Image (tube, rainbow, N blue to C red):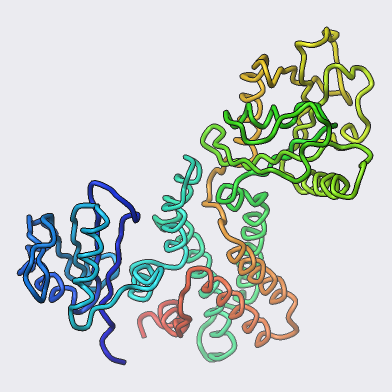
Length: 444
């Protein structure tokens, strides 16, 4: 295989800004930097440079140049960085000039991170953590992405994989080296170790999908009868006019989603159609979608109109369960008894339009979201592919414990190790012999 191509890309967001950063990676990175600024600066020291066109020599910009020789760079290759002014014309001129340098081309999307992975600078989970860090919009997303990018998830999976390979190596020794002084209780020890690993992974999988919810947001469905004030509540929580508010019943026909930051946690708030007997097909479809969203939501806000007390609407009452916060809206319009209960719950009394009770409701919602998403201890799974691979690993471990012979047991352990390796992107190598030598041949 020949030398990799040299690539470049704008590392900062497109558009006008004070500073724009262009990165170059590959064997011609130094030549590209020399073509634009006449020299390669001292490694890892910013140097004031005048960037010129590589053909006609006209000045394009005045800024900073940096040089990161491989392998001590993000991609593991030689990397150059140009920091210029962030005007569109300046950026276009610098990118066009780099296209004229022989052996240099624009990078494909994600190609810098791909090279970092291929050169062993990042594993797949760290690359995913980097992407999540770039896209993080709340503090919880930021914390989770930073922890994953730092390798916490990879260390967990690599530790399990190392333990699994050790058990597999012991089993292979039992099969292939019967003349070696292997302890008689090896089979029982291996089975106990496998059972412990399977139990730890199973407990880890029972996390309520918190990591994925932090990435995507906790879904909250706002449900209730027409004109109960659902849209007003959504607007009050969003602090903007996200949903249309009207005295006409049935204004909301489709699900309207609003993304919020509650106490540093991401939330997707869904305003839904009012629950009632539909007057026509479009409203009926809106109600069907509202019920579906309520069924699949992580949390529900059941909104009742205070003026309807004590005859609360039955469709909304039917949706109250353990994941529901009960809310009585428009409390400014009617006097309610102090001991009011709805389905045995003490409701939040609010006026979405006037603001009464909204601070207490927001505090209660934030607490529920925090309880649902807060992670302790081990780093959280953040993607479905992690969960699928880990499920496959656990299945293989359980299957190995009931295998009819040691050869099939060993094959199931290989499948389990391969599933774990897919999470971090490890290429499976024959590392069993090293483990066998260390554990059974010391001193020989």
